[in-house]
Image 1 (cartoon, rainbow, N blue to C red):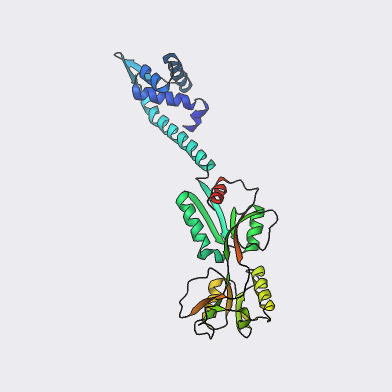
Image 2 (cartoon, rainbow, N blue to C red):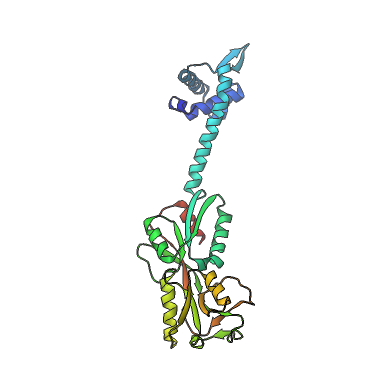
Length: 295
């Protein structure tokens, strides 16, 4: 049936369907906002292209021929599919359909990610979400290469070739085993941790985070004794709960049994960590545009 579209036009199909529904050229012409002669010419042209008669007069009544009745269902389906194709193209252009390829650092999963995705899903429920955790460095490369659309990451500074927008400012907090001697305090100074063993992020999972935390400790007068490293925050918290050491984590932190681990604020005046949404200005995806408007 689609091959026939080479020898007919959608307007001819629409005219045929309306005439078939009305079985009266005059009423059909009114519905189509055409003159009767113009409508008659369209039907005649369609019959010529098909090589069959679609309508006949029987006892002064305008009726479908057997070929016309058989053609009607397919013509209605073709029109329905054409209308659907138009709506799909228009909705895709508006960013209501498509795929959003989003990557995020793990620390975004406890607050920013569910907040943003929940709002986006409510506004654009038919957009497909392609989601995966990814370090900041890998996200930056993937954004520049066009392999992803948007990232939730912690940029240490302006990243060449990318646009970004800060969505939260997150403090550094201390994670302690629940029975630790400092656990009863509401705030803890970095210098109070000088004699502790540390569980920190691996450099591979976040070199800037690792180096910055070590730098803060050095500024407080000591070099942290790192006895274990973890690639993700859940692993680090589990190791703290096991008593291997204390840790410094970027808030928000994962929920945990307060009988195992406690989180405490730092009394030191440290700059917060920025969580940003980043994207390539060369990416003109309508879905990305909608996401950035929501952000």
